[in-house]
Structure formats: C-alpha cells, structure tokens
Image (tube, rainbow, N blue to C red):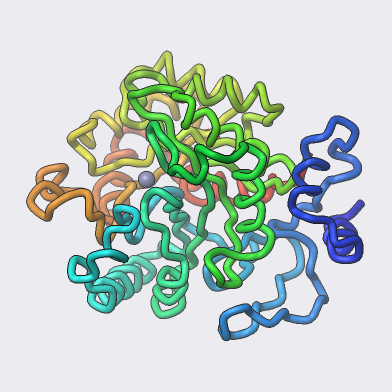
Length: 381
Ligand SMILES: [Zn+2]
C-alpha cells in the first residue's frame, strides 16, 4: 500500500488513532502492507492544500519526492541543507509562564529569536531541529511565528521530556494512550496548529530507566513504528544511558538506525560510542559549547577520532542551545560555556575539525547528508 493509499484508507474508514496504533504494532502488518513511501509525512502530492485549523495560511501542498514536515510546512529533503539536528529556541519550565505571566515576555523573546535565526540563516544554516516537547514548555504556535518571520526551516517534535516521573495525567493512563497522542501530533498537527511533528523525543538521565522514563521510551517506539518518524533522545553519556535506550527500543522492534542517541558528544569514551554506532544508531555530538560537560577541544578530538575510524556517516553536529532557557539565570548560562551559542560550530568547531584532519566530505556528511538520510528513511514497519 502506498503512503497515499494508506492515508486515504485512514480517511475512508475513519481509522482511529487507536486503530492505527494497534495496526502498526500488530504482528501481521509488516513493512509491505504499511510501508510509507520515502515521502516524509507522506503522500499528499497533488492533493489540494488543506485549510489549517487556526486560521493560519493554508497548509502548503507537499513537494514531489521525499519531504519532511517543518513549522512552515513540508520541505523537500533535498532542501534541508546545512542542518543543526538538536537546537532549542525556547525551553521553559512547564506551566510556570502560564501561571506567572510576569516572568515571560513573549514578544521580546520572539523578536530576539527571529533576529538571531535570521543571522544564522545568513551564515548558511538552513534547518534546525527543535526537539522541545511536553516537559520543556513546547510552544509550537510561537515557533511557527519565529520560523515564518526568520525564514529558518524548523523541524518540531513530539514526545515527553522527563528524567524520572511522569505528569499525573500519564501516570494514570496507558502507554498506548501516550503513543496515540504522539501519533496525533505527527499525523494531524501540534497544539491546534497545522504543524506536524517530524521527530519523536524522549530522555534518560542519571536516574536511569525509571518506570516513568520506560513508559515514555515504549510510547515513543509505539508511535515511531506506524508513522516512521525518527527518534531523537537525551541521554547522560557518562552513565552510558544510550545503551539502555537501545535495549528498550530493540525490545519494541525498533530499527536502531532510525534512532539518534543524543548528547553522546559529552563523553570521551570511544568504546561506549563505538558500541552505539555499531548497533546502527546515529550519535548526537550535539552539545558543542557546553564546556561544563566537556570542553570544545576534547569534543573535537572525539569527533576527529571517530571520523578516522570511519564513523562520519553516523554523527551529527549541534549545540543544544536555546535563545532562552529558563532553567538557568543569565549568570549561570554564561558560566556553562562562554562559547555556547548557535554560531559556535560555524565559528570554531568546523575550523578545529579541519585542523584535526577531518575532510570536507566528512563535514558535509555530519551537517547535510546524514540529516537528509535520516528524514528519507521514514517508512513505517
Ligand atoms: Zn536538548
């Protein structure tokens, strides 16, 4: 069944998200019957642009060929260009600004974001993946405005960000229900917008795979298989949480080459990193500038070493920066890393990698080709 037919059957038979979930994870329906084509969000070529739910401009018709959903609509994967695969725009404590509006000046922060993303775009970065989800103050209507006004292509995420416990709502409900909500974000749109999530996000930190974290990882896997959208994670590298994530994904039947193990660049443990890539996953060397975890020269040395070992095709470069992250006061943010900003890779990291013997071809893999390949490998299974 082509992706178009598949989507059509959803409409015709009013297949619910619950059905989709059941179908996607059921044994009988494998890649052959559920396979989406290489088209990212899948198969609307030639269909009329649909009316957006919140009075936004109509959703643009997807381009022909493989594409990925962004905050400003579907974008051909060949137009992703230089992509930072793990950057936030705003990262806020869930619910604080909604309850105490005096702590958050949305207009001022929006202006700041538009300005800096315009400059970043002028420097040649075309796309930014923003893995902000529930638990870190996701605000897709705002990100949509920033993307529109700055011209930056922003890929948005669904999932849940916790190191341990779940919000009470999810404590009381099933894994399947959580997965259903993630699928809704991927197939219909996020937070009342027409913006569709194109990546699934989860986290495992020093507390390890707690019952809450495990529920999220399994829900992410259950939403991934029927939709095909890639998974990106947060990990604590020093306690090797990436391997624990791979174990859980594997037990859910996830193809580990669809997974990006995030924050892997926080460690110099080549043995651990080799294990992650040998199991097929991408690794996010994605906190350049966060010297508090590992200084830039050491991060560069690790990437250069892994390039030498032939793993450039499994790495992604990013900074995990945000225009505004309310978990830090400005003083603390400064102390975390003087070079921590959206431009650090362009200004300092790429020159340092070249000096360490990393080739232009390897840099292109880590910044352009790998992101493109990730968003072209999106069939359901
Ligand atoms: Zn992050």
